[in-house]
Image (cartoon, rainbow, N blue to C red; front, side, top):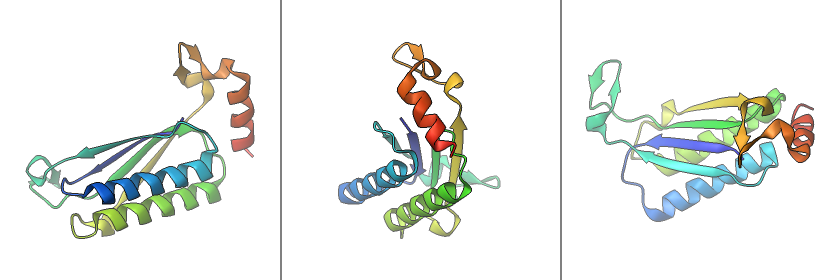
Length: 134
C-alpha cells in the first residue's frame, strides 16, 4: 500500500511516464513486498515553482513516499537509489536531476486506516510489518 507522489515539471512523454512509474513500482515492490502501489505524477510548471525565493527556477524532481515503516537502512538506501535513478532517467533534459530528493515517510499500522479499519487490526498487515521490521 505504498502511496507515492512524484513532483516534477510538465513535458514528459507518455512512454517516459510509463517507464518512470513502472521502475518506481518495482523499487517499492522490492522494498515493501506489498501489493497496491499507488503513484501520482504531479506536474508543476516553472512559473509556479520557486527555489530560494526565485520564482520560475528550474524544477527539481521530488518523490514522497507514504508507506509502512522500514527498519533496514540498507533497504532504504536501495529504495532511494532506485527512485533517484528513475527520476534522473525520466526527467533528464526537463529538470535539474542532480538535485532529486526522495522523502520516506514511514507509518506504524496504528496510524493507517484502509477500507474503514485500522491496519493494526488486519493480521496479514501485522505480519508484514513484523517482517519489514526485520
